[in-house]
Image 1 (cartoon, rainbow, N blue to C red):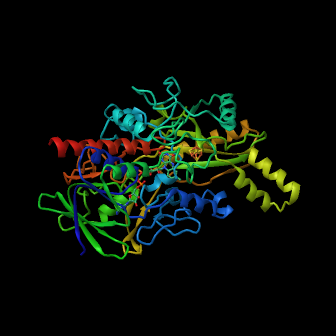
Image 2: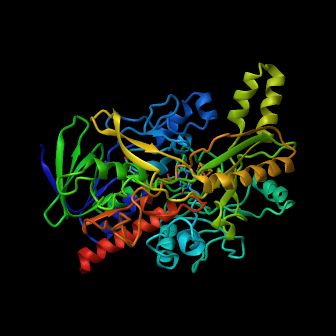
Image 3: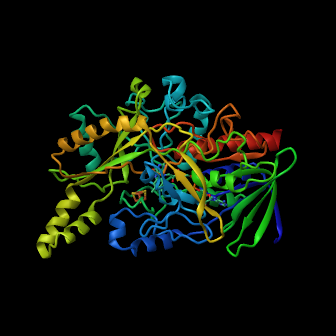
Length: 543
Ligand SMILES: Cc1cc2nc3c(=O)[nH]c(=O)nc-3n(C[C@H](O)[C@H](O)[C@H](O)COP(=O)(O)OP(=O)(O)OC[C@H]3O[C@@H](n4cnc5c(N)ncnc54)[C@H](O)[C@@H]3O)c2cc1C
Ligand code: SF4
């Protein structure tokens, strides 16, 4: 056992959720220590890694390889696959998540779509009699949504008459970004069939904001914005550090100590040489994302908590959710030229809400505005073309290629479960997470209509070479595994993200979200994390 460290608050994980909490608490004058399993990464090196990646990886949307994983803090790599995490069940493919472990967390490579949930998403059971309700209502969350939007710098449409956008008391911090040619044309074409296209709220700068530049629209957002116009969680890690918070990278928390009152007294972490270090604090926050947080709570089971930390309800690791997706690609009959502007700007929200949710899942339909040139180049080469014909085919495919997706609301199901693997371990000997996943009938029923919508949209564009995923694909919005609720018997955290079992332990992750809605989930995770910070400040400064 090496030296012992101490702080007012220990935060495990430096993603957006952990960094938001650390920043708020450091700003309030508390001493904060952040433990991060993975290494620090520099933007310039990541951009260089991206440039040097093989075209086939780029064309297949491999956003992981440029973030090399380390043996003590594995994260998923898909080209080639490293099998992390283990997934099985009828819809295993739909839980092949992208997470990153390292300072700043997973938002290093996100698309920054930053939606608020609808009040009915949050109270799905109260409204439609299916699924579960969150511990918190929309009204209780709204101020935290707004603060998260300001901290991240979210641009979006202020027109509340748009179909199914969340109510708001304050305008977005920034005006929406202008549409490029593809998003403009998409809006016109789908409108002819009654689909209302809504500009996606995005955490990227439509004007210089918070010391970061304006987005120049050159479409590299996934896997890395070279100039930092897109918000990344690392900005709040750096801001917290400036205010005095200390970050220890390569520190993998694996054990949690509790006392007779079941308060947390210490966490222990391994460094890359597997030397163990103990850290004490008054309050602890675990912000290890929706997969690593339940994994750690199960791993850290002790004599007082034999089923795992915070797990007297047996709900830790259950109710794992994401937005099961279907992706369609095709060649449009006319040049569309996706790739001008950021990667995700258009969303059809007509089916985001409605009484049909009693029977089947709500959906979001969107167009990816990702540039098609890499896919076009690989395909044209595979066709064996050379010279002028090759050039023409690349140009045609780059102009006419389109990707349309549908994301589904999924219901919390306790059988969709994360456990500790019994067969695979990482470089420190810590078991992999092992997830069993089935999207359920509620989604399968809805997907029948989703596929009809996709066919209809393809027809509107005179599509050829239509390819639609036969399975559900993941969307990296990891929710449910430390589910929130009012009743300690069937939930893990309360409306302030405080664990029911340990009064000084908070979980700042999407795990608290008890229903999935249809839209990207990180803004909600960030807003919930700000509630955790508010409760901790109340405890420690005014309690
Ligand atoms: C390709 C891609 C695109 C996406 N696009 C969008 C989008 O457009 N909109 C959206 O809303 N969401 C999007 N997401 C999802 C979004 O990135 C996540 O929801 C978000 O990053 C979650 O934040 P977090 O802080 O909970 O976790 P993370 O960002 O994953 O950070 C958690 C951190 O905790 C650390 N940690 C974990 N366990 C331990 C431990 N035991 N000890 C120490 N440290 C630990 C990890 O190493 C990690 O750095 C996307 C994700 C991907 C992969
Ligand atoms: S379009 Fe370019 S500048 Fe704008 S957020 Fe994406 S990568 Fe950054």
